[in-house]
Amino acid sequence: GGRGRSRSRSPSPPPKEKLHVGRLTRNVTDAHVREIFETFGRVRTAQVVLDQRNGVPRGYAFVEFESEAEAGDAIDHLDGAQVDGQVITVAHSQPVRRRNGPRGLRRGMAPRGPYGGGYGG
Image (cartoon, one colour):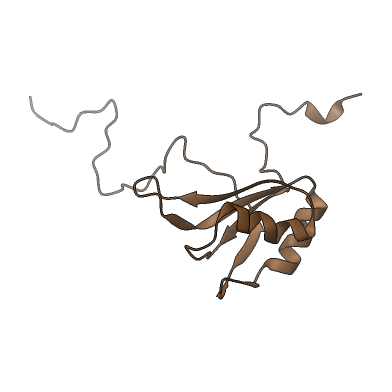
């Protein structure tokens, strides 16, 4: 019986196998990240995020493990560890919510609803 997949409407939480690695120096490459994290398990993907404009590493990476347990080991051992002389942060990846954009941040702006701003007549 496949009971676990009945809740298809709610957005699923991020996979626990996926980690966010922060505070990397610009010298660190995908291969470097993979090498470090493979100490703790089977790495599915290791990707240093690059700036789209100039191709320079943005200082963080995503690493995906085959299992949640391996990812947990990596967090325990590598969060606060030094890579290329810099202390890095490792945590479970947070869900990215960029589809709708932030709401309610432009309070100073007049609402652009069905109600016009002009009180003429």
